[in-house]
Length: 352
Image 1: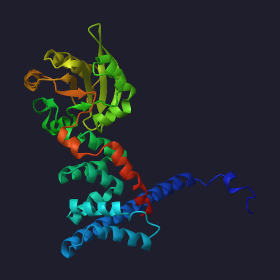
Image 2 (image 1 turned 120 degrees about the vertical axis):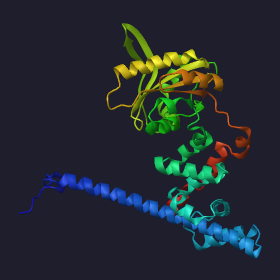
Image 3 (image 1 turned 90 degrees about the horizontal axis):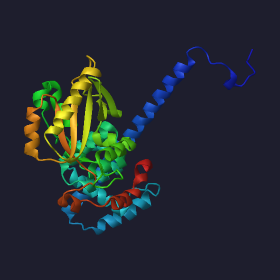
Image 4 (image 1 turned 90 degrees about the vertical axis):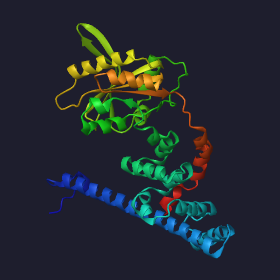
């Protein structure tokens, strides 16, 4: 006899909920793969069109007017597609010129949406830099806006630049990764504080903007706490900022100094590392590392101080206002310009 109740009121059979969850996961995965496949085909198509334009202009001597004619004819033939404007055809030409090797397009760049590729194309001139940012964007699933921020703040160029003693204070298996984890300088231009802000004011602002702070620190950092209390010998001590790094499997102590680096700063930081190792570190954790962030530093003085320190530490500067090199500033359009250019192209991938 058929149950007269609506299907939504009938209890599902045993095991149905688990099966449904599995099916949902499969469907989502299939949708993602389909979207990636469509995107790869679209980017490859744009590259092929750009390559054809380049080859025919070179072989036939066609001028720039041919692109305007081609844009008109393609829009007429494919009115439902929004990617055949003159401006986008010019981008296709520049895209093919920037990546003459079709294998690169299929293997790396082709995994990114067209809008991401335009950020790389218009903001970076060096092919190796473009490829490095493309691979990192794929690895971490960066949105176009996030990629834009990281390119603008020269994230990859700053990585691994902090002065450290990791090579002599950490096992060889982890010293390279630890060194690459730290950068110099750190850019805190997202904080609403003045250039003369004190240590506690900067520290509090960083915690209030912890999401952006974690983005600036890089992948793998997990926030543990601010002014973390440690009791040693009946006395109270407080760590400015404490993190745990998921890849390094260790605690990371960050101390802020709103002044020029002094060697005795490392003595205080080393004391905190010992205390964290003694009171918080487990057998599964690697040795705690420290990062001293200061307003400025004398590189030679910092190198000497680090050499004498028994604990794994690094020294880096922080900047409250981002300052790009003049030659890089002149080669980059403003955020407003790039956003205006890309806004009209956001729908291209969807149209594909």
